[in-house]
Amino acid sequence: MSATRFGIVGGGALGGLYGCLLARAGFDVHFLLRSDAEHVRQFGWKIETPLGDFEITDVNVHSSTETMPACDVTVVALKTTQNAILRDLLPGPTSKGGRVLVLQNGLNIERDAAEIVGYERVLGGCCFLCSNKVGPGHIRHLDHGRILFGDYCPSGDQISQYALGLCDDLVKAGIDAKVVADLATARWKKLIWNIPFNGLSVVLNASTQELMESRESSDLARSLMQEVHRAAGACGSMMSEKVIQTTLDVTREMVPYDSSMRIDYMNKRPMEIEAILGNPIRHARAHGCEMPRVEMLYLELLFLDRQNSVLSINAK
Image 1 (cartoon, rainbow, N blue to C red):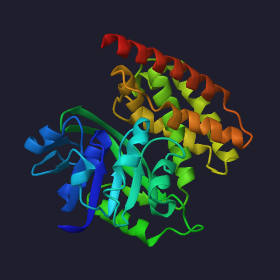
Image 2: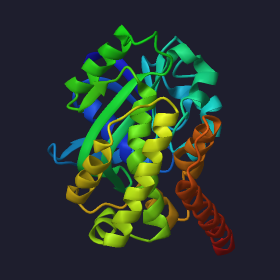
Image 3: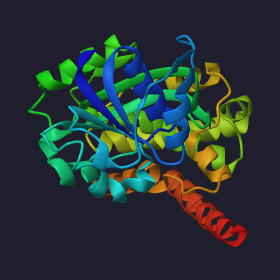
Image 4: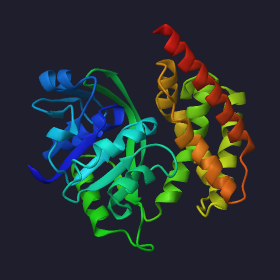
């Protein structure tokens, strides 16, 4: 068994996949699960992936952090809408000085973990991943899978030795991982995809394939991307404009995919609107840059989220 012990907080499409890849490679992995804890405890994980389908049995499953051991790395794979409970979840597995790797969508989302364990112990990562949870303990990985991550509070332009060592562990597990010195720019780059394709998939009720096959929606996506690119530059994250066309091309070529926000909306769960749209809007405004198209999308999503919540309450 490899030396690094991992804690996985959240067993959805992301945490389930990466945690199982680590476990398959021989790392000591402990999953904190909720709804399907008993199922995974009895039957294990089933992973369908272009990397080669596999199953993991004899899984370390925990329903509470009280039974989790201290971990070297605790991976936060929850939706940002659940970050309020991190104050209860992180102290246990990080009790002996372990780091936290925040693998969530959005901007400035590492702060919630950093205020609990200390800013110097937090890393953040962007996952370029098409993956869905299709049943209890059952993950279907469709495409991509790269993680770009880095220190939340780096020392100048230097990448820490800890981050480099963690990257080695992830790569050993078959994960396409890369350390970046500028985490903020990596997050803005991911937002160039996340803002248009998460948002439009809900508002227009369409998959990525449907959005790209329509000239009108693909043009709308491009205009949103241009606005995000401009905001990133205003905030000090400079990127070539080529990233826009590259992102559109990659989206056109990927397998048909429902964004995480659309899946949450269809299942009447809260959407990650603030992390993915609200935080970038506010951050850009603080740097003198407005994003009117993104803000319109943001307000539309807030309306739909509120309506969805009412329908969910009434259904109960």
